[in-house]
Amino acid sequence: MPTPISVRLDEETGKRLDRLAKETGRTKAFYIRKMIEDRIDDMEDYYLAAERLAQSRKFGSRSLTSEEARRELGLED
Image 1 (cartoon, rainbow, N blue to C red):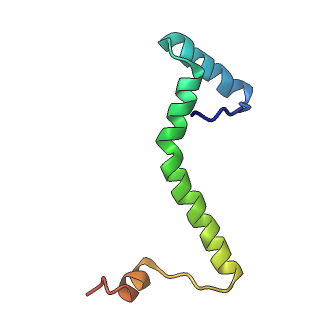
Image 2 (image 1 turned 60 degrees about the horizontal axis):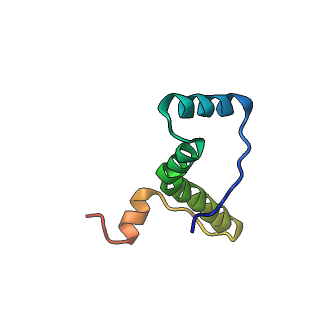
């Protein structure tokens, strides 16, 4: 079952979305849903990684460079 959601857009973005929907004959909901579905994977990756990094710094964990991580995982020659 779809989850209803309410979104407030700034005036310019709202006008752009209105124009896109009108000129293509699709609904604004179609485009909002499409934008979310197309970008949610990237946003999850970015924001969840940033949160984990912030938490690790908060608790004193150190960060690794990609080279150090590969070496520790045995992926480097």
